[in-house]
Length: 345
Image (tube, rainbow, N blue to C red; front, side, top):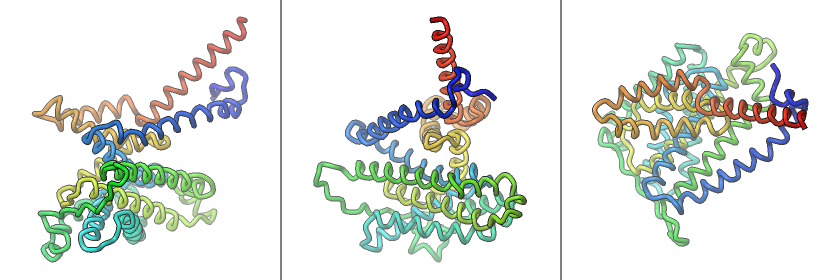
């Protein structure tokens, strides 16, 4: 296959080198815009933007399992719920600062993900999907147990004590939480990128594509698969802890199996290209339900299903993959036009 650089006689690496400064400039502009958003947006828009980034953190983690690991997890809503309840319990019963609790939630969910993945990853295909689906189904029921009511609040849930926040520089708690979520989503992307490149990335790809050959070459398949799932669970737990701070309330019904399905939908509709994929996927599951509710209040679920079908038909590579393909074609046409102009002159 001939790429856009070779069409005009330029080496591919040279063309790639010319586009890197432009990509970095766009990323810098996007980051500056995101940092300035709390000063420009209203309270509702800031709430939605924070929720979008929180969901993007969970989707970045799920992408590690689904896209890079080649496994299907239908239970990440359970780790999201675990992170939320850890935040609620520790803030209500201890004087720990909320940032430290976010870290604790991530570590505990990492351990829970490791313990779950150790036996579960012996399964494959639909059996692993079934095991994770069972985890998503049982978690809300577990949180409603009468024996745990004093800790979880049972069906009534728990109110999350808003931690003391000193408004010394004219910054509200909502703005601070937005910037914390922005920092975490950037760190999550950097972590996921470092995992999926280099020697570790090649080993994960080998496990996904040819597990028998990878095992024959000495790649510890169980160790890589378990660690990947545990990191994914940790990111879901961190996202859940931030969500508890955002909503200031947790209840079992907030973490039904539909939440895990929403994360899968975000992975598919957003695609897996860079940080754009999880962000676009999170934007879809955050904004699409509100949009279809306003368009068709009588049957929003039917319209949402039609929207998913349209995404599957017209965005087979996800929104980020389709945008990347579209930009690549535009760049190719521009390079061809420039080459033709140079030949004419």
